[in-house]
Length: 582
Image (cartoon, rainbow, N blue to C red; front, side, top):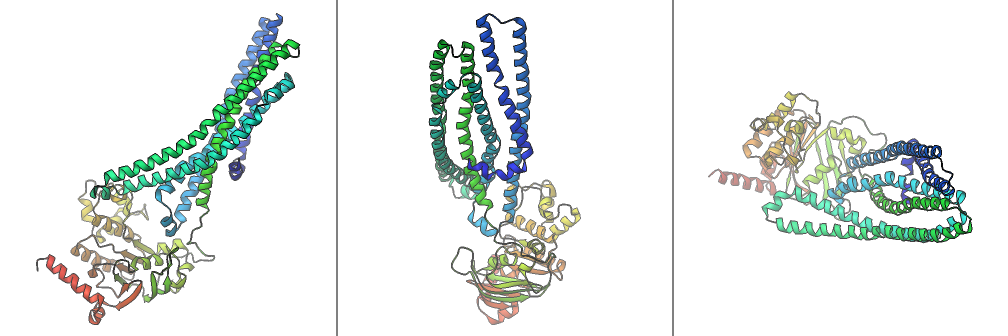
């Protein structure tokens, strides 16, 4: 029952609803004692020949009133208890979603999307069951069982009651043992479901790659194996779950046997009447539900405890990137300076950046080039504070990035990443993502600067075209340019294009860069690229290799010096000439 203590914070929060629901449950439990008692009285009056029509109508009336009251009260306690359980699921779902939005990049490198989805669906459903059906079963089984036992002992025979309860300790021991095994097995079943959920999400997201490489059969086989593992572990849970009902049925059967054997002797001895024996066995029948409910309770509680442990451990994880005390609540602007001794990703041993020192004045353009894995994207992630720096600092307008509120810092930066993510919404909604209420003219202007306006107009529904999940209906170049338009609509102090022109042709790239020069006068732009023509106009160009700056300067300076930049530039110029038939 540990999970009820873990959820005590919520029970206190919704105490009015739970107290009201519990009181109504208790009243229903008392009302359930009325029919067996009346049956016994009527049987004795029949046996004695004392039953009259008026008495019969009276008892029938009492039964009808009791039945109607139980009907109404059961309706309201369900609203109170089950309604509160739905609120718990809503609150935990909200807490989880808020937690996900606050977590830094390192968190998502450790966690799988499918696993997080399983936490927000399957686990929350199990917790909701505990706060609803679990509370109901606990209160109802204890109240009904307690009141029935008291009625049996106080109004009929305490000796017969004790005899009937002899098998109960055995049931308590066995159900407790079953509950412990159920908790362990259900935890494994939930983990298997999380893995299957992640597999499904990954396969659907990567369906193009799977089909392109003809791996459908292998992927289906992998899914089948994981699905079988889920079934196997859930069957393991079901095997324990299936032990509850037979165990309880045996205990109830023994109780009935003892009650009838000894009850018959007491009737013959004149200690109780035949009507009281019938009432007693009817009361014993009412005990079947509390016993079955008790077994069901263990099932619900152990599932809920396993799920709550999983959700709690997830919520307990701390965000690595948080606001310090007394941070500046303003959007930064000004010069940028990087003074990084070294940077190592969390959990890794080897640094990925070494001795990065440079500054960039407001309004200038920075170009960053280098081989794949040279550290270009890592440098940008430090600027948007996806990670904090242990050895060194990045300053914005002379202040460390951590001196600004994270929200304010990121409002100053428009970031177009390599992995262009578009939402399953219209093109207009995707571009206006940061400001849904902005005028349509502004959306169109941003699209024109990004050189995507004409392409959009050629689509079936223009700006109202639904792009599909992750922009599946668009080409790579179209997705890149829509992402650029989305960032431009922010009019950020710093615009970061992380290899964001790789999917467009040289002519389109030139048109976009020229438009950016005109529109972003006085604003800082940072561009990483493999095609050097994209950063040829930059005020400062950095060449990275294995996390170090090996060359720096303007395009002209780097061409004069010679080295990697000049060699790569000339090679690309030659490739372009060959492509044009030269």
